[in-house]
Length: 235
Image 1 (cartoon, rainbow, N blue to C red):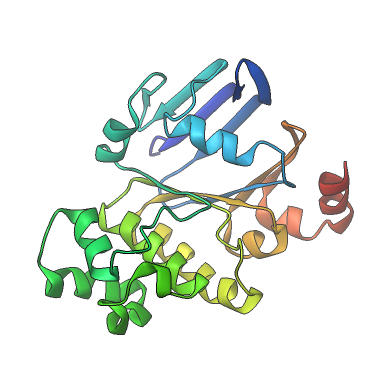
Image 2 (spheres, rainbow, N blue to C red):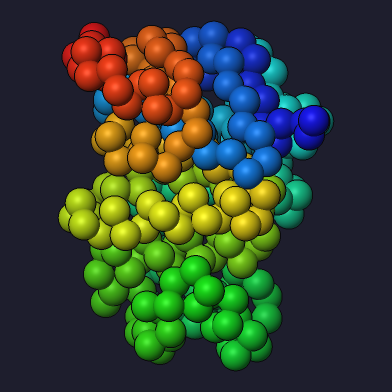
């Protein structure tokens, strides 16, 4: 059996010494999609920032590919295969789609880059010269995901993919998340406020409320328990 690509044990994390997330246990296996759910302020983004090395954990352990990464620099983690798509997508409005993709790979081979990106997001093929600031929200999300995928991540963390997007756009993007996990044996940690959407593609799920785990288990079981979902969000 393969080792988890990400393992959190007893993680406490927060800002300025104040815990936002408390005693979080979570595992992501290669090829698995894990949904981290909960309302605004539950601690989902804080968890991702801590795993990425942008926040120092207050307690607990973080293991990536079997090794402790507490105290590791974010740039080192990125080189080692930890991909993070933030909720603001991290794009530069004045740069073109092609320039963003070249930055992600440090290459100028537009044809080669286009072929790889086209496998995941064919809609970007005709947008290579368009500036990111002129893209629709869905196109920006595709670009942010494409940048992360070009780095061949072992773990891809996606923060609030649905933020600012129409439901139909999110429904079109979700199958790609599933394909990424299956075709690349890449673990995916999908942070999402809208539980029903995330549970469509997740294998397992963990729900946070006020920084604590209120439910966890197979995604199909959580999706079928409407009372549990409602209580998890209303607390």
